[in-house]
Image (tube, rainbow, N blue to C red; front, side, top):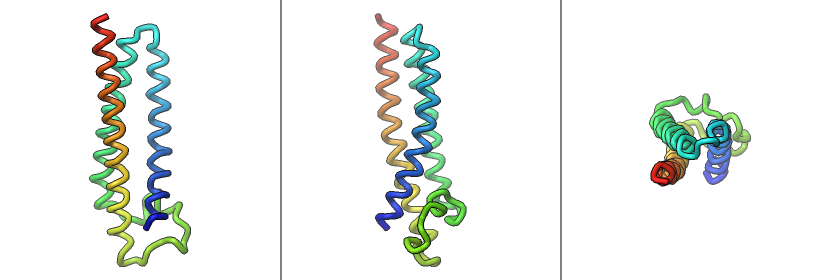
Length: 120
């Protein structure tokens, strides 16, 4: 079970890393205006958090054999078929919600920075 958590964490982390790279590129493109840059970053990270929440809801009903986590699990670490759907759904849901919480915190910080720059 712990190996499954690690694989789920790695797959969601990689996906969030690519999303964060895209957000960073947009923010760098708007770096001439700090307020606009942080507003865009706040909006996009809020969107990323909402997508992660939706993915956590989807994880409960998605077939476990079609998840990226299942494909990366070595065959000897896969749980029995009767237990696999529940275990995969639970682990992915928890992982998505954990990343959504972290992304929400980053979004709040960016919105606060955008607010501070609008006062300056």
